[in-house]
Image (cartoon, rainbow, N blue to C red):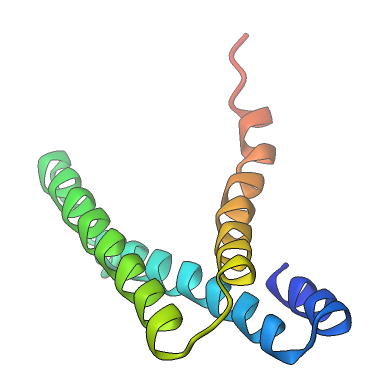
Length: 109
């Protein structure tokens, strides 16, 4: 999805806009990948309390990483904000859309 957005941005507005959209998408992927590895990293079975503690700490670090990467992208690399946030939002939307087929299987009768 991010690559499709980048192609549209390249055609419509140019390479810098496409780069900003890809940067936003990369921020979303990297931060969510960190969280997944932090929580489920080695696949070991853990008590629920420990899983919950890892989840909360990983989420806090993920939020801090997201803010830091946005600040770096906007401040240091001077990317355009709108395509950056659209690229990031698109990665979040993909995670939500991926759950739609799962929801259909979870219906109780």
